Length: 219
Image (tube, rainbow, N blue to C red):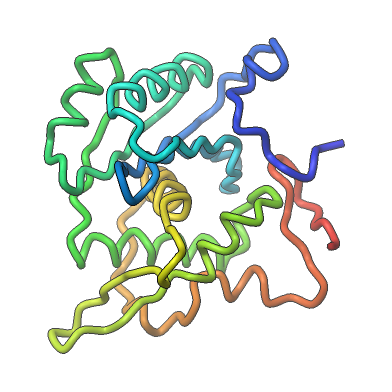
């Protein structure tokens, strides 16, 4: 029986067991003093996407520590097809240092407004198709509900989170999902979607599918 809350430990640390060789994708959202750095790992299997691991670092954690942890993730999950790394404010330095540390398939993502819209559009499409399975993680759900999308006068979608909240987990997950796409999604204005978490969590009583399961857990 799966647990109701996902461990933030890498599986080998928690169980001592080997992780099956399957297709994994990693998203890394970087932060420093005001925002946390987060590493998210998803498994894509038979068209279904499951969040299997998420690590949020303490504020002020040095980027080198994040690189070392990300490298450990790559070693433990053994078949990471892509690492998508948010390079806002750090440019190509972090992705390049990650490559020098031995990580392969690293791609730095500069989240311009069009690119952010692509990332969130793809995540929304995955959710609408009921292909995303996440653990019962209260903080992640709060972040998903707190994210706000506004259409600018130029017709571009701008994202921000409500005061007093964070969106680091959300963006790490979104980047991992974006890394797993098999094709570039067509552009759909994100403002047309409403809250990004509206679809999977507006069902009565529910219900966050546990990682590795398709059965909802009632609250």
